[in-house]
Image (cartoon, rainbow, N blue to C red; front, side):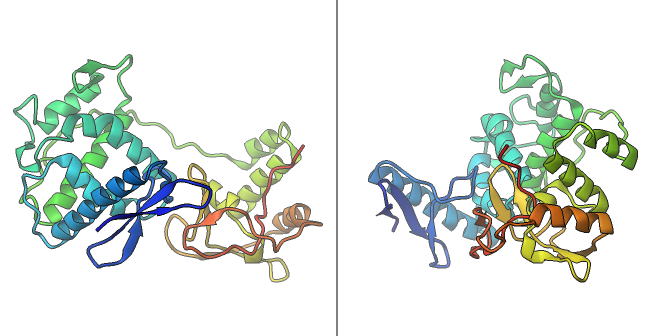
Length: 307
């Protein structure tokens, strides 16, 4: 049975037990953090809904969920597993679901979704509408780019793949769907010459960040999530193991490929580190939540200057 706990400073959080009997609390899908409610009843009602979703997830995992389940309810049951890896990508995915998928497919039973042949339930017809800027009966001011149509479709296709793999559906209705052709573009990159020219117009702290990234090959999230305790200046190496998830303002405990890696430090990279860390207290923690639940005891290497 769901319940509501009072929070320090006012408000409530909704609690429930999942299918394994483990205590859980209602999370905000956009941030992944425990959600605060102003009223006790709202917290308990939300927890009851999450308890139902947990039961449904167990049924899906065991192949017991009927194919007549509406797409929206099915997505809500599997989205927690997809959102377990906190990332900015999941924030974008949540927006796609709420703006493009749920309005169209939210109430449609999975076993009524077909590949083509129906303006109401055909996947191909839906993709065609997206291509021309038509979303659930209304016209967008500008059609989405073909690449974004692909992005929207990819989320829907992933849900159908899960439905097939878990036995809710025998086949996916996404087989044979034709998507708009994407224009081919050269992948963006920053060479050393352009990086140097860019640095001429940047503040010194930003210039250090750009130069350090060029010296080490760090991704932006890895650069911003780099903690001082993972830098071994004496040996000339650093360990890449944490990432800043910018939109959620949290530190994720693994990089994009989920594999911690060691990166050598060039003389220029060491100069930048010395400049960034000089005179700072490096043991007070970064002040951001770590998704693995650990308490941070190290400062971030790169911080913007106060002025």
